[in-house]
Length: 245
Image (cartoon, rainbow, N blue to C red; front, side, top):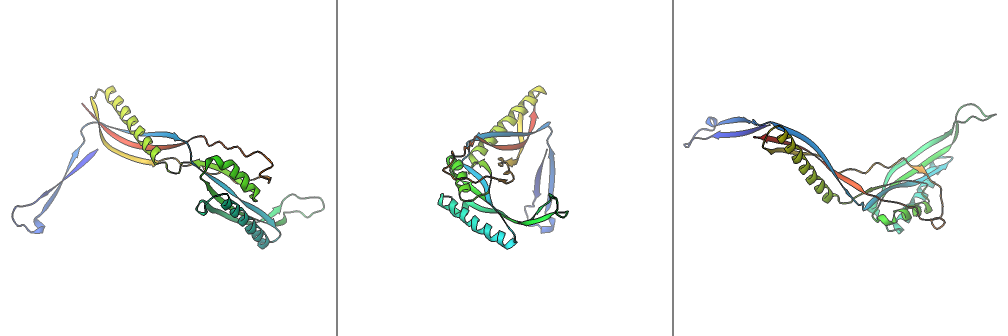
């Protein structure tokens, strides 16, 4: 570890600008330096959940598939609004249209794939801010016409408090390790000379690929059970300590 001391020499009398000299002096750190990278995590209770949902439709023409899909997606979005989900918490995550083929050759049919129509899909990412109602919200989505559900993915809307706690724990852990190495190597104390943070927090896992789900009336079965558990936020610090005699 090196520190740079910049010295500027100025005359007391008037001196032309060209006569001003600038000198750089490099002062090397003479004590041994230990570099540590420490990650600490803090757990908390999630307060939001993100769910992927959407509608898949099939028709013989691409236009019919898209039109049918649009009508059913609008119905789903309207149902989400009636459930108290704000517009800002509903985001389109993907729109797809693909030709579908049957590759199973049957007796009496010509060999090769058989065109069976077009499949359209409109996927939504929905943020749910009431954790206790996640299961009921999933059931309401299906009742409103959703043909696929994936998630939920839990997180904390404002993780700043947990991240600060994780940083503090990481710094304490780094100092304890540095002090251990100093004592083991015969040094009296440690002195912090640099610190940097390479990551803040942890992201929730990506949602699973959409899965087809069976439609059912929301009042015909128990509410889908959902357990939020705990989520963790982490901080990774890289620190350098000089070992002093």
